[in-house]
Length: 65
Image (tube, rainbow, N blue to C red):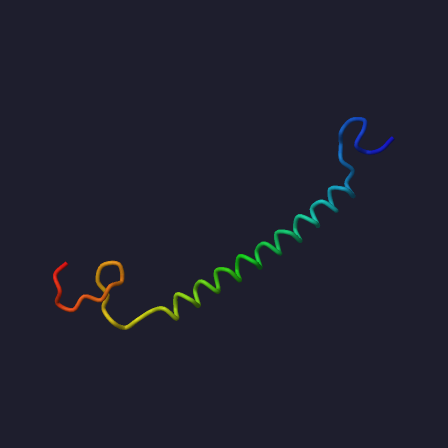
């Protein structure tokens, strides 16, 4: 009788295999998220400006808005 039939319990070795696959997928997702966040941080750092900025990033030099 296959393990899927009967009482519905999953054998220990199947649980281990499922956990190892899930762990591997989570590692892959974590690495991908790190790469995305790292790229956004680098982009934000390169877009900073020492100039004062007004509303919506538009430079206002003594102009009333």
